[in-house]
Image (cartoon, rainbow, N blue to C red; front, side, top):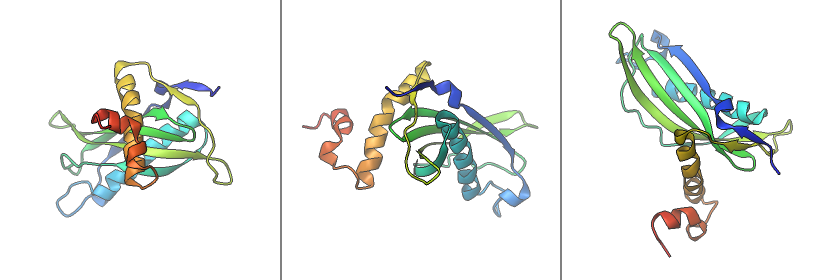
Length: 172
């Protein structure tokens, strides 16, 4: 039986200030810089869950809803949603805060997948993630569908074998 670990133990909250070197010519945070910050926060979350070295395997649909202005405070919140044998899905929310105006908006959200590896770079088993809150349970329940979709899109799973996706669309 695999070791179990509460999802809450993988929680990461990272805060950054948007400085001039982080921005584009419109004084908005560059998308590549945002993806870098998201990857770092998500990797720390996956490492906390697995107690292992992790590598990024995939990133799902990073949408840039709102530009993040120079001088804003960016807060990234990451947490493992589900662990499979050696891979873990991590959900990230990104918030942008303009402290002088007192406004805070959700600017980004994404799911990252990481694989835990040993010192030789070979995949290694990770603990099972145990969700406790209703939000954690909701993310956990959807993780298998998101995983199957990733595998189908990557050509690593035949669509007819994606049982969770077929059930979602009532396909026979």
